[in-house]
Amino acid sequence: MYTIGVDFGTESGRALLVDVRDGREVASAVHPYGDGVIDQHLPGSDKPLPPDWALQNPYDYIEVFKQTIPAVLKQAGVKPEEVVGVAIDFTACTMLPTLKDGTPLCGVDQWRSNPHSWVKLWKHHAAQPEADLINETARKMGQGWLQRYGGKISSEWFFSKALQILNEAPEVYAAADRLIEACDWVIWQLTGVEIRNACTAGYKAMVQEEGYPDRAYFGALNPAFADVVDSKMQRTFGELGSKAGGLTAQAAAWTGLKEGTAVAVANVDAHVTYPAVKAKSGTMVMIMGTSTCHILNGDKLQTVEGMCGVVRGGITPGYYGYEAGQSGVGDIFAWFVNNAVPPEYHDAAKAAGMDVHQYLEHEAAKQKVGEHGLIALDWWNGNRSTLVDADLTGLLVGGTLGTRAPDIYRALIEATAYGTRVIIEAFEQQGVPVTELICAGGLPDKNAMLRQIYADVTGRSLRLAGSTQAPALGSAMHAAVAAGVYPNIDAAADVMGKLKDEVVQPIAANKAVYDQLYADYKTLYDYFGRGKNDVMKRLKQIRREVRGE
Image 1 (cartoon, rainbow, N blue to C red):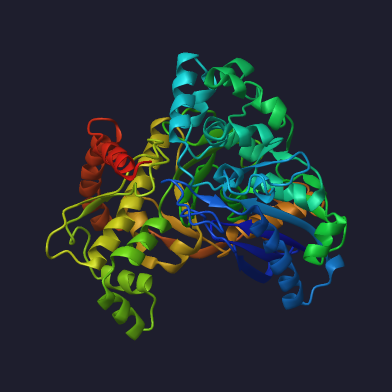
Image 2: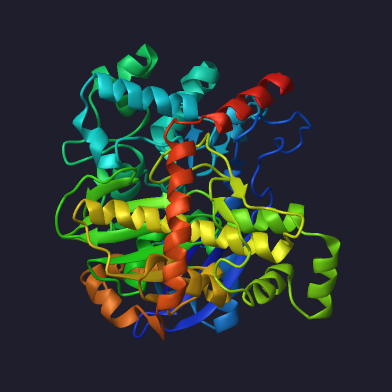
């Protein structure tokens, strides 16, 4: 008996076929999105998109099902009737406008050339003015729910993006019968049922126990926004692990599975990972990829500066699920390799039989802590936690004519570790303990230096997910619950979850040096991030003016 978890990432979608009896990963397949991340111009157009835009093509998601699920069935020799459930996880907030029947507006000829009709990917940061208005208005009106989100709603979240559509393309907003998370849209396409999941609603759409903010609040943002919930969304939500419906005949044809196969309510990539690594209360799980999402369960409700949200049962039942994050991690390392590493290092990597990342790690790992003389701020894609400000940018201090590529590469990795330490300290200052770290994702699995740096900087032991595809495994576990194989996700985790045996312990001598460097990082963090010097924002504004944007 098997289930399939489909993990929708930033660049591709992955299907994982899992044996529900023991969590054994039987087969996997990956399909890159045809249009990838759309941040330069729309497909078929040469008109540049404005800065900070990041879009996707929703039809790329459907293609993932068509390509990967038949592939894993064939690879494993598994019959369709042996698969009892399917579940997905997704980056969030990734949202789109659709017609009443679920047709994406970008699939309608009338709207295809308008970028607001396309999917707004999680790292679409162009809605910062809307996020600022959402936060300012909430404070003026005394909206208590704001503290559940660390005191600030991000430009990445649902209503920031929805309000941007209304403000900049009211005709698109008017044409949209639905505004919906991409993960929920995908489940709609599989089952024919429009059902919103409680996880993205709680963390990304400002839904708490009492529901959404009231109509008066939304109307204060824009009078035409007052009825956004009742006219374009839903007020009922599917619980994590519950069954959304069964595969339609069309979806069965896409996947090669049986019509009626159980489909779980959608979930977020980070949150499905928590049970996949058997995490317990007090353990912070870091899902590290292009960005990092930090999640942990706590026994009590607290407000924490800059957290992305806290939702009761948002990760697993019975606990308060906390989320924070960094909006650039792997993306920062990739930017550096793609744009700032001299050819000699590419040549040396090729000669050594390594990719450039591996080679830079190999060279940087030879250094003692502090040897390169650099400190960086990890804001090359803005700051998600704790400052919640997409207009912040990167910084490198200490460079000389002797600075080399491996030095900068290591400094950038250290910067992301410092950023994680800021998040940990914010939680602990509010009485939410963080006892250990568990990492999931390709970055920590491939990079031993990164693992040791994170342990040394944070002063905590670090473990690795037992699967390199932990989100997809977590989704497969939720599919098993939706299919009735296990009564709840805890029971599924006991059998199907896994961790590697390796435990990375902090090295005391390294931590002592990193404590000194971290103190300077924090000085820079506060100076540039808390309004003492807004040079980063001024530079962005000058760039916009010069470009005529």
